[in-house]
Image (cartoon, rainbow, N blue to C red; front, side, top):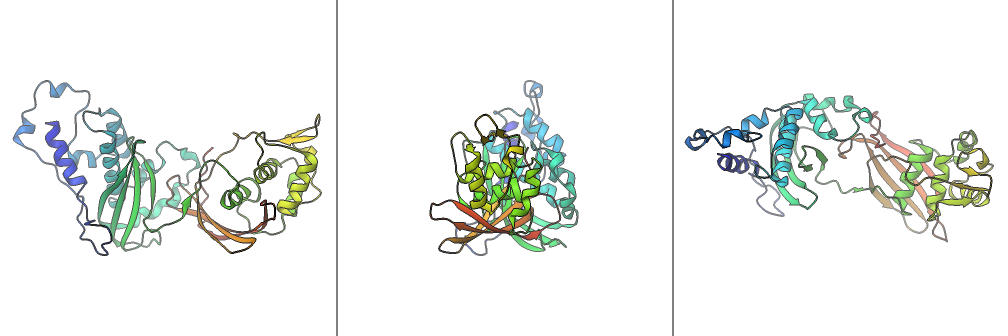
Length: 359
């Protein structure tokens, strides 16, 4: 019985509109399916009926809530579905929730293992008013990490959202075997995700400046930050200075930190001795390299020539890089010794919703 249902299920899941690479207007086919019953299914043996979890029909799976769906996946054995199959089921389930305007279920799959208290659900209320006529999906790749990437087309009949506007739009959807969405972004989005590890790249430097020091502010006079820093809240500044002058032990002499503060941000007169990171025994400052969080962000572009560059970074309200929370533009100077100086920051887009932060 299992094999019959599995065959019927995946014939429906992998029907796709993408006939070949480079086609401008591929024919599209919906992934909507109906339950099928056959004589063989009705002839279930006693042995099959005693399995730990029954393989549900197509219609039964689609009818599950996000919580029920994830529980169902967790109870399936590899004999029922492998990790790739589970990721495919997750992709279809997520798109079905969008089609059915099931906001709570959509959010549950977007958040899955993340911290939901950092997630602003109200930012996603527009899903309730998006009328999806149909969707199509086809797999693009799979890997050893059990993640699967799908090309998705949404045909939206009616919408008042600029994020999911009426008409046809194409997306990239990445899911996993545990019933979670890991990426949902437009197919033509070429911005590059910033990694968890920092480096001395322009993008990382700008991201660190926003995350640890300036916040999402438009400013060019960073000396204004000295007052806050002198109140003992200078962990962020110290971290940036160390990143800009990368050192294996993340430690600087106080005189070096003062010189770097002026060189990197134009900050003068800062009293590093008021920081908990200051060590009076050897007159140094240091930070713990594992003591910070992360905001999902992508590098949109780097423009300019010579020593002055303009960097644009998107920050997101969710862990799947779907909804842009804020966009920042940075002016940076590359110095003769390849160190970096931040000249200005500018908030160029604000959704009104807070960015999501891993802690």
